[in-house]
Image (cartoon, rainbow, N blue to C red; front, side, top):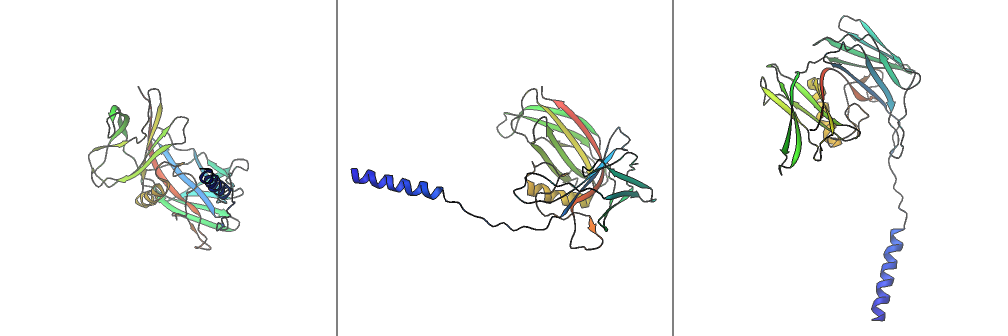
Length: 272
């Protein structure tokens, strides 16, 4: 017995020492790439004049800070070449415009000039069907024991693309989904909250976005990579997903991010 116990002790010690070994992992690093968060959103019931664009760069895997980018010149123009100038807020990397004029189906061109390099993209402002009802089902889910929220709208007969976003008060968790209207065109349809543990008193905000087909395709890839519950599509992409913004000087040195212009509708409810 003593010999067996000694063998066990020695074996245990071997594994404990092995666990303490430091393993060095070499991670490939790339030069920082510009990230342009230019998602102009026109909330129904507002004039849409207040808009914001953020500039940052990618950073190393182990960094806990996102470097901001200052000193850029940012202009958005409509099809009549009316300029909307975005001015930086005190070295924050955030640029705001207070006189933007949103028009459904209008074409807009973004121009970002930074260090003598010009980045550009063009998008069309898409409408969104208004939210007409939000319902609560206390017997939802596969097991019929979850609280589920459905948000209904009447889809127009034209082809439309949507982004659905559910956010939860004081939580980073959110649901994101993108869809076309192939299977419900011209009919009443709904988006659905996917959070499993909603409780009475929780506040849920749902936002429906009208998006272009190009932005829809981009979102499908981005949401798939992020698992549908990341910090959101309006933040730095979790992987190298190429958007619609080009570097007019060097196309291979493209920025990350997407220039989108769309109408939104939002509701906030409290679980009863």
